[in-house]
Image (cartoon, rainbow, N blue to C red; front, side, top):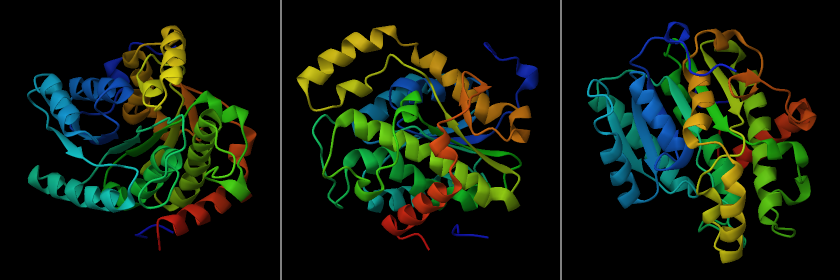
Length: 302
């Protein structure tokens, strides 16, 4: 349970009204930064989340003149640590109050990392599992009470087509005994889609909140340069050249957040504003429930 009970460019006539307030994790570069710019242009208020003070300040300056009629701020948090996610939720509450805004209209779980060598957080979790998946699970549950009063709230987790090529490793969820950076990445992306499927089932009594998994495709970003490996940096610099721009990838996410018609869709997995069939393993109800229960214990969710 929770803490409480080709379409480009978009036609503005199909988009929902402005003045929405949306949170984006991993918003200092790549898809997150591009999405923040697009949402501001559409008239949305944006709370960006980053883990570097310097990069948060740079992003704030870069976006400060996009739309003077909207609110914009960046908050600092290391999403690999649950203690900081709880603190972040409190800061978001305070920010909404200072803006005199009563509710949240959207949350985008976009933050991701891809360390080549396995790293363990100070709380004892695999860093990919903690950032790419578990942070979104916890932050979503902490913020659901602020979305309950929104007329059409959206939750979007940024997944990947790599989720098609894996399965859940139930006996080694964090791959402590079989870590491989790409295997771990695919694993977390499948977990995201399982989470979104189960989240929508929990939200059946709250039709004003819908959750989606967004597949941005191969994107020319810096994610592969965060992998504590010069060899991995070299590989990613070659591979990302074939990817779309962060702006193009962000458009599909903006569609899920703002389009008025998508609220009536029962599709959970989308790419380029079109529904796709996810990995069948992501639709297994027993596995969805199992992952939710395990994740709840990991974050002490009651």
